[in-house]
Amino acid sequence: MREFNPREIEKKWQKKWEEAKVFKAEEGKPEKFYVLEMFPYPSGRIHMGHVRNYTIGDAIARYLRMRGKNILHPMGWDAFGLPAENAAIKHGIHPARWTYENIDYMKKQLKMLGFSYDWEREIATCAPEYYKWNQWIFLKMLERGIAYRKTAKVNWCPHDQTVLANEQVIDGKCWRCGTPIVQKEVPSWFLKITAYADRLLEDLKKLEGKWPSKVLAQQKNWIERSEGALIKFFIEIDEPEKLVECIPEELKDTFLKEKRIYIEVFTTRPDTIFGATFVVLAPEHPLVKVLACIGEKLGNISYADVESFVERIKRMSTRERTTEEEKEGIFLGVYATNPATGEKIPVWSANYVLYEYGTGAIMCVPAHDQRDWEFAKKYNLPIKVVIKPEEEWNFEKGAYEGKGILINSDKFNGLDNETAKKEITAWLGEKGLGKRAVSYRLRDWNISRQRYWGTPIPVVYCEKCGMVPVPEDQLPVELPLDVKFTGQGNPLETSEEFVNTTCPKCGSKAKRETDTMDTFFDSSWYFLRFCDPKNEKEPFGKEKSDYWMPVDVYIGGIEHAVLHLLYARFFQKFLKDLGLVKDDEPFEKLITQGMVLKKWVSVKKLLDYLGLSEEDDLEKLKEKLREILGKL
View 1 (tube, rainbow, N blue to C red):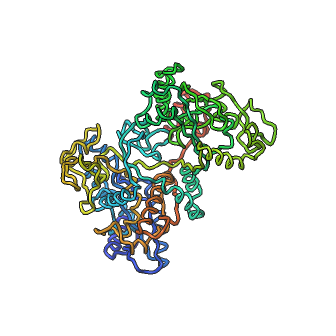
View 2: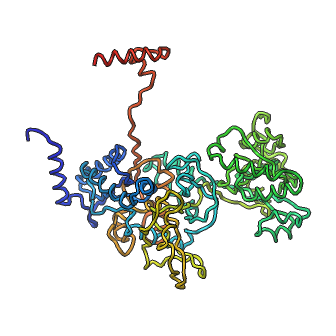
View 3: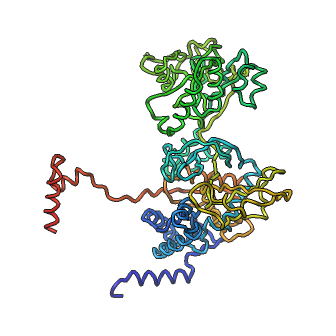
């Protein structure tokens, strides 16, 4: 060949590869190796970030294939999601058509690049033959109590009109569109990922040296296991019958009988309880308005002031509330009893306490917690020292948060604080006022999305039977075509044919669930489907998954550290509990490829290059540019 013509030569060999099925993966051969890159969302075009990711995987796959390894290197499409629905709203094109047209175009691009994929294993998560198994897995989770429904305050994106999981809220904003989220009460479906918290945390040790330490650290910090105590702070009421209208229905009988109500706090520092001089609740805590109502009737505060404060703080992002130097709070008009000292201490609500952490309420020991110290100084609340530092400490300048010996702590004086943690917790337990507890930062995963382009949640609601799961032999529950995309509300609710159905239990009229699943559900097990993508009887055959799994090398972005990567580990453990997989972890080695960036040139470097300074005016810059253009 005299001259290399890439258009001809590449096309020729790619055709030969396809005809000879060079990259087809088959089970049973020795030395299997599973190479996988995070599959793309079919947005319409392959970009350089994709190319970098897939080139790394392709180089590994080709090298090891030539070394005699039996390679599985598949590709598919993470095809559900909001952009398809937004395209339907904007351009009047159905999400399915938009998605599949994008898949066709992107697939041609990938084939032109010559990546060594086994295209016979291609999957798209929006295909009924795939999401049927999403629904099947959901039903298994429902059977085992891992999937459940409750009305709860959730992260709501006003722009996308849908719920977000905690992991999808970045700095108080929607991970996809950047809109500040608000809190809203919505009936939602949750997955009890917290039931796997200890295993998710413990098994990170198995990944040390195989996964980037930064990813392991992010997951560890996100799960965040804390050992401590749950402690009750009671609010005694002299004439409860005069305040009963403030109390929620479920608490009224106990309130009238015992003449008290309690706040439960979680603390990692029970050793400091003798120094607790006030209690603070998160503004979202359900007891805030209850206590404010009591406080107003006792003549101590204005309920309207508390309500205004709560609504204002709830509009702040999590980042603002946790990083703002200014601590803000409001007195709720009631006093709780410190269970260790018997002293009456005020109850407040403040911006720096978050409802999603612990119990959403804290005991405040300003001498030994800096945030509490700052709050106490601002609002002139007592500061009581109960831990004696090893060296001199000026409590007028800040809190001492280290180790030491207990003082001002009754019979526990003289104990080192680590010993005191155990002894004080046991002592409170004997009095029925506290108990040892473990808390996690991790929260259960809200998978409900008020959108069309996702997996329908396979349950119906019957007036006679209540919530009824759709039987497995009726799966998949398919998305209807007769929906209206207006940009307002949930499009699924516009399809009468979909919504109105019959109860599979009694045959009466019933309504289908109109929430669809978070798209991260789809990607939490797709790597297993690649092992057996044509299986019509089960999500994948165990023999095939046992052969190929775990994924030997997984390649993708670090931005999924506490999203996809955490969820995939959770699903793997659940599926192992079902007996469907053999491994505790889905991905043996993880490579985070980084981002492709444009070259960045600072203004100063540009001025230096042009022979100008920052003091030169715009006319001089224009003159210099004209000079350069004249030479060109």
